[in-house]
Image (cartoon, rainbow over all chains, first blue to last red; front, top):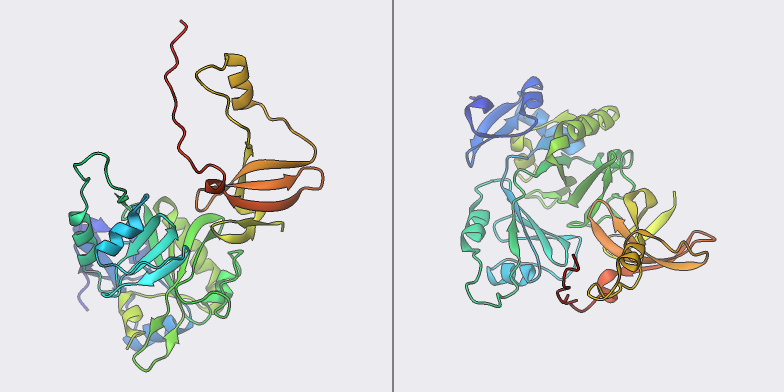
Length: 244
Length: 98
């Protein structure tokens, strides 16, 4: 695989130096340098992703909308937003709309990462001219505020139990559930988002979103906590392969 | 660890929460004198018994109200601030005295 130099792109992960050190092979997605693999054979990385693996998705498109009227406005834009907070709702294009609170939505792109939905929404949003303005919420830039990791594999819940007070076992923490909690003493958002294979099997996977300024710290904490389960860094390819 | 029930996030370790002071009725800022205003702003009654307090779930910055017995440190109930503060407060302008 031809790897691009992440420094050649303006958009790269805050931890790209660490990823380079670990042997990441980068590809360009939506103008950003995304680690696609870590140099191992494709089947080997897939096996890691089934066991326990950490991937960095920070460069993939994500954004937020907040304020009174947000859910109604997004629904009018064609999104599927359910009534419950702390629940993530799947969208038609594979994106995820995480309802963090009644009036706050965190949008994450699919693993294709085209950013199409986010571009459309951000282009569609304008302040209404008329006063009083209707309650429609406002965009919240999230791309550079939150680091975005995915922890995949059957040992993920066991590993989380070492560093997080919330019970994330698969029989307690349902698909789409969100825990906004303390992870390795950091405030973090954990979202269960199983990767569904074509044969119907669901492979355990969790999104982890946290303050980007501490992304290096959190990455090292997660890799350290996973050592006893033989955690490996994987790229986007392995996560996509989970769905094959 | 002690567990507190956040109205938004459910039961969580107490280490995820920050105390925000007692819930006190605000004196009218237009007519109140400085001493009473400072008293409301900075001083706590520190009552022994059941008190209503502001608490914040730090990972979500979600502020809510808890009723707590300060003698036994027992949390009796928690609810969203919107249950109590459900109407907009308008402030009239106060003429400057200096």
